[in-house]
Amino acid sequence: MDTFLDSSSELYGILNSGHEREIAYVERCVGDDQMPRRFTTWCPRAYAMIGLPKRTLRSRSLSISLLRKPADKQIKKLPRVKKMGPEWERLRRQATRWAADHAERLRSIELDASGLANRLADNWEPLLVIAEVAGGDWPARVRDLARPPAVTCAEGRNIALLRDIRNIFFTRQIAVIPVALLAADLARQIESPWPHFDHGEPIDPHQLGALLGGLDVRSKIMKVTQQLELSFGLRAGKVCRGYQKKDFETLFGSYLTNKPEEKVEVSQGGGFEANA
Image (cartoon, rainbow, N blue to C red; front, side, top):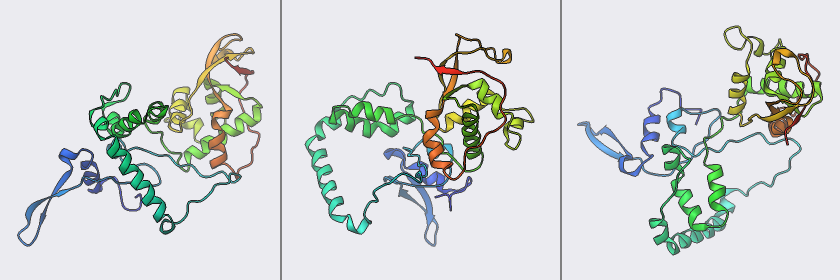
């Protein structure tokens, strides 16, 4: 969709209008006399694109983020669509029968959407209802998926960020690193944007957290095991927030497969361990 949908496209209005059945329509003037006519936009749709659409469309969507396949990972390809006809037909019949068998409960179930924002709850309501009827661990599994979508890892700045973080872990030979120390180390990478990230100022822990949060990597509570530089305000035995190398491994494998690790300049600091 990135090939024809720009930020000013009128298609956003058409796509957004189909979110709720009651207002799923657009009006257009048609014919030689240009008379207004209403067209329905109520239908399911799937779209794929590099990057992200406008927030208005994202807020009405169930997002599936795709990563590059690591070079060493083997996958089984799906058959081409024309060979899947009988299989699709079987699944369609089973889904239709299941819906018919549970129609009354599907209509009457009281959904608990606590913890989900209004629009997010609207998006996920059909799947949450189906999960409740299916029972077992399905409600918990679907609720775990029903969270704000992570920003997909884009080319350019995010890849540079992943590359520099991997090199910092490689240089320090540690498995975890405090947020403040990682931000300080990134600020030493003079060929990257981090030393002058914000109007000439180096990247700070809050900005780093925002970038990594967009990649679905979040800091954890850690315990300091050695004396650190006073400039970081950390001392042995204290706790701080930090990142674990293992939380980056999937991203490293997907986006840095052809980039070898290398030692880089880092700031001074000590060692850490994850807080049990």
